[in-house]
Length: 277
Image 1 (cartoon, rainbow, N blue to C red):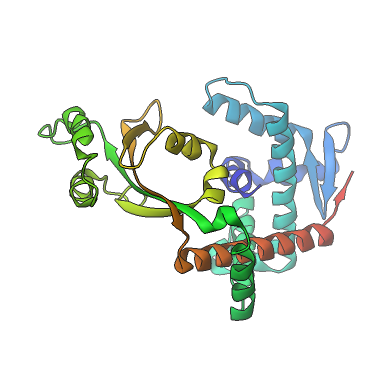
Image 2: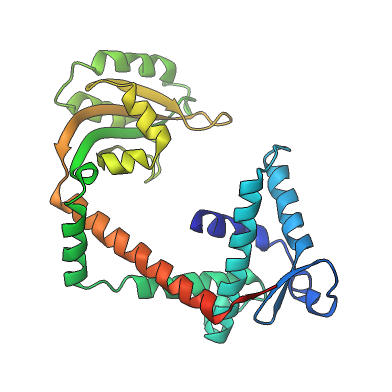
């Protein structure tokens, strides 16, 4: 849900205050529902759908996506109403008439509350994770993002990517690490990393699971990130069937607890600002 919620925040900024709040006096068949003092119009949803379709160059939006969008849009309205009731709009950084300010403030406040996990809760969540065989079994991969297009005209990246075949026999990984750090993009998300991924994580990411199923230990694969981009993800499959580390389990436990607490808080927001058809 939060992927849609956060991605829609930017879209909502294109609507003026009059467009978002002026529907209360109009009513009629265009009204979808009411949340707090907010009247949500069907035309608002249609406008956003058109913008998304335009960004996708006319590609159809499935009915499931439309349903999720409507639900997430309503959730954003609930968050916005909740933020106003909490007077979060009085914070200096949220002095804005746009919903983005209210939603950002609401998510930040909810996030702060969700951070509060006790040591006992974390230990219990780790114990629960250890009971799941898919969690306890991991694979280790190395990843880096490189740009196929040379910026200085000196690097022949196509040739460099072909050289990766020769690095398969480097079981230590040191040669690949050196190569990766030499050509990595200047971006924290694209820098060389060693990743410990559980089987459960892989199953939740079908694309990554498919990639690794096609690879043997030692294999290196170049995966295009986007048809319109020259960036590629380079994946090296290091080990499989590794026992998940305690540090990974702790990170997973904390993330799970934050997610659960956030969902509980969102549920409370929805109860406080119910949807009225």
